[in-house]
Picture 1 (cartoon, rainbow, N blue to C red):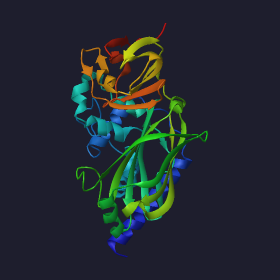
Picture 2 (cartoon, rainbow, N blue to C red):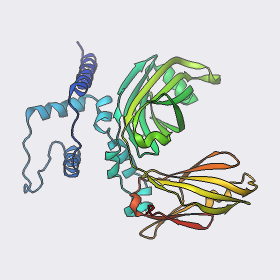
Picture 3 (cartoon, one colour):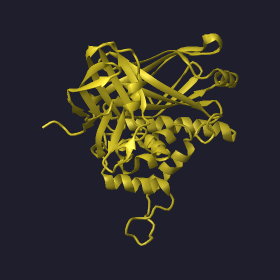
Length: 355
């Protein structure tokens, strides 16, 4: 048996063993901050982990730990994603972002480790495609799911690269059976982002989900149908389901009932919600005629306690002539208590919970 065949068989066997172990193992208690920091140091230097206060002495590791390290090295695909799950992959992504400097001390990526979800379907391999769920986080308003897609057949790899990753249908269904809004998804490939952890024929997909029920947590399924090729015709027909269970999360909710004159109409700010990844505003038109001009979005400003201001957020809007829901996605996870206020149309709203 040659080396590549043996490696492939060993990799498959170890993946299955880890999956079964994970299913049978009891749920772990939530790790403490000290434990997480120790694990970060261990992962940064697994072969030379220095015990805190040990004056440079190396901690002895049991044989079982060395076997785990060997397994992680061998499992270049799925295990790397599992190791960085539970918010860890997103923490690395945000830590490397240039926005960290803009947000300063208000940026808090450590909290992502408390927002990580349980990946229900780690690997889906069918109809010429392999999906690996790498990480998922939810802050109660926004959920993000990181997935690595591998096109297994080489001729199709180049077809997908030329045409881009696109599906005939993408929908997200909650545990209650309700279809929720998957309002954003982005794709990068091994060629467009060579610095990313992608190989030839692999694509990184980031799904973004918006659902008021995210605050309660629960199981969500991302359902994909037919990978499209030229002329939007199915290149690889099939259906794939990716499932994740998200944690409940607390969201700051205020009811300012402040009247805002915006683009020729008076609007009542009925509800304002803030979480580490997003801010939403529910507006109700009181009078006047709205000319469907969205210029007032440029007036939205988030003020931090240290005097910094955040203006460049990712904006989204939905609603009608009489009601609008605005969504602002922060470029970094924010420590919510460090947000002093938000202003829109020149009106400043302090972020203080109601008495």
